[in-house]
Length: 113
Image (cartoon, rainbow, N blue to C red):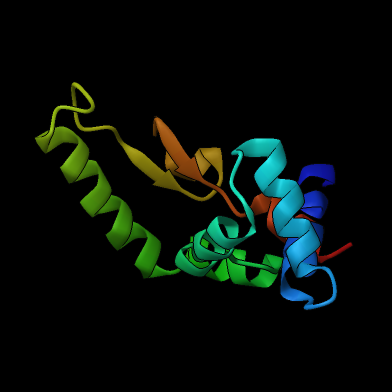
């Protein structure tokens, strides 16, 4: 829960006009050496799922599966990976031997606290 809480707290700070620029500057300095203008562009071009409910909907919906199918095909076609990786969705028991798994369990747990 601590990692998820930190993620959503940062999203709240980015969404709040009073703390947005300060938060973007801090993230830029800490992780990428990007200035405020560059960080504004990064968050404009990046889709953030700012709440657990948005993340759960993404993990349970069809859009992620469709997108990941395209990503996997691209990675195989351009030999980024040696073989087609199995992608799973949901709990480990449902995803089987997937090498990459999207599991909303922690987001669900967090949203119920």
